[in-house]
Length: 321
Image (spheres, rainbow, N blue to C red):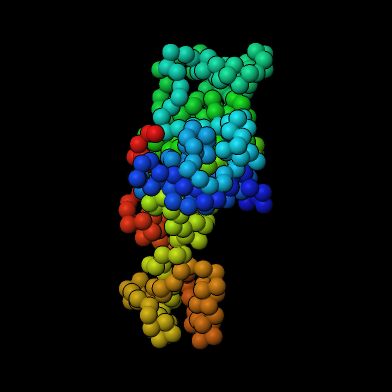
């Protein structure tokens, strides 16, 4: 993950959107720092895809103040479009063109001079490990290759902000990890801001500097992955002791703990924070109880997601509007 920037790439204040009587976004507030990965999570119909469509100027908000890359989404949509790239859940690759031709087409659409467009296509083919397949029809590409080409096409115009809507859906684990490495490099090397929606909570855990959880059009939680995990009960510190005597002494210090005499361990409930961990060690030290090993266990993002929304994570199924 990256170091958070002090400047905002995306700001959203009081965003509302309804389709008829159905409220999709109800006062959404977001602040996404430059050169970071921001993940928006939510169950089916939570409003994730609608938020991306509004921020990328595909549909209009009912009300609210929105800024992307310094441009007002409502007052200056052309400025927003010039500064962003969008990679949707379904690939925009043209199967009847080769990989190189797809990239050169994007260069033409971005009004790059022909020589510059060819150079940019060659650079991206090399960066995304597509040189050997450059002159093959995109229809022959594997799923992972198509996703890499799709993201490369998004980068032709050198966007400052990229919206990634379910970028690794349908990919095998190896291809997914390759995409993760590419995403990390984009932020670390080029300072791009990535706004990510995903159904894979491990993906958000691995990539995102900050995570927001959306439910019924409202933001129900926001923070780093570790901050969100500490909000959910069920964490504990597991202590292993060198003898039964030391374990018994620790049980007296932490009566709420769960001992396992066979493994000489004691599970002490906690949120996994540094302050709490320090307090546990201080109490053991002051009572002269020796510990062999200590491990911290916290709930994962699946636990967080379910606790906050009452749903398991899944792909968004919002209807196209």
